[in-house]
Image (tube, rainbow, N blue to C red):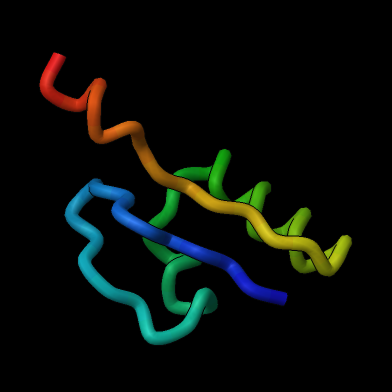
Length: 54
């Protein structure tokens, strides 16, 4: 299982493991992480750089 956190903000810079990220993330992201662990799939949380300035 691979969980990717490309450029997700909220004051989070770096997590060595996805387990340490579980303490800070919002509930909706915790559900994504739990679902990906259960189904052994991946997901990506990020944003569109073109729409960030708007």
